[in-house]
Figure 1 (cartoon, rainbow, N blue to C red):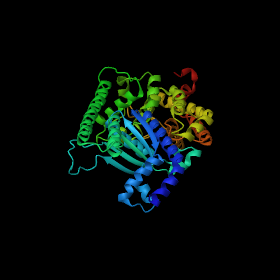
Figure 2 (cartoon, rainbow, N blue to C red; figure 1 turned 180 degrees about the horizontal axis):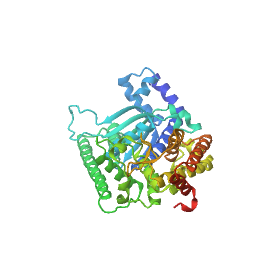
Figure 3 (spheres, one colour; figure 1 turned 90 degrees about the vertical axis):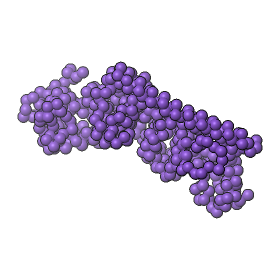
Figure 4 (cartoon, rainbow, N blue to C red; figure 1 turned 180 degrees about the vertical axis):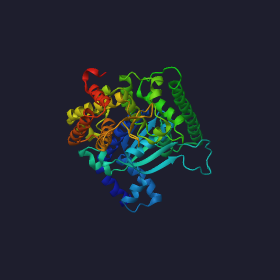
Length: 437
């Protein structure tokens, strides 16, 4: 046995548990990210077993002649591996975007590779999948897991049918424990590959049929957040000019909010959708829709806020989960003040996002509210904090929440003493609990 291979296997045997844990954490993270964004998949993981890896390295070393550990690690990218088996093959592009956002992607390899002249009798082009070599960001790991940020992990993304076929072919052709497959066996595997490719086409048609049903003129309710995600993806493909699909975001949270607001159907959702430019260039689509719902129903802040902590899995945002729990009281005070501000603006017919002309009525285009430059700056800064908090981007520290609440109180003082009577009356109505929905 090669000394380089022997030494590597000895070291890897001692590290096997490390790679197994890294693969498990990565798998759990992938499963939750896909589920929360409405992508159906089966996610599994494994670390290569030392005896299997040794047999593979000895075979490959005949051609590679490994000189050191680095050459072996470069040649074997999947010591820790995660497999994402998609229900719908067309979701590969969505997964690509999610992995690019939440992992450090070192390399991507797409299959089938560029076609080469065939020397065999295969009629079909074999394995269809994308392989990603990634690192997990330290910020996504709990304190006791930071060491796993150094583990390179291979994530394989393909359809459930393709992964099943690849397992059969790999075990029969590349690990023939019962002898070399015959020409007839190769032909049958090729035939199965053709069936799998046809099956993937059928899955794509099924996915489009679901989208058409959910987009039909009748008032179709979304039975789960996967159906909501399918509807939003289809809407974006038909609405965003360049054909790209911006991030959908946390559809699981949005679905719960729509149910609570009695807006959980295609007919009721359509008026809430943004224009094409906002969808393409703004924050994730689910956040944009949630903002509209909360603007119309500010009393739902008390429901939507806890959803961020209740539905945000600690494995995805471990630090934020504990932060939410320890700051719940200050979050409540801040959101209560923000709701009062939103209600006052709505009574006045003012859009909370000012234009160059100041605050205007979105329906008439007329100026609807004059405030001091200091108040304008305060509202803009507090709005950013509100967006980060409500959409789970960042949980502000207690001090920031206290300062933001105090800043809003200074704006309230200006509204209470405003020279226009209608502004003073609107604020009085907004802060009166008896007038709230």
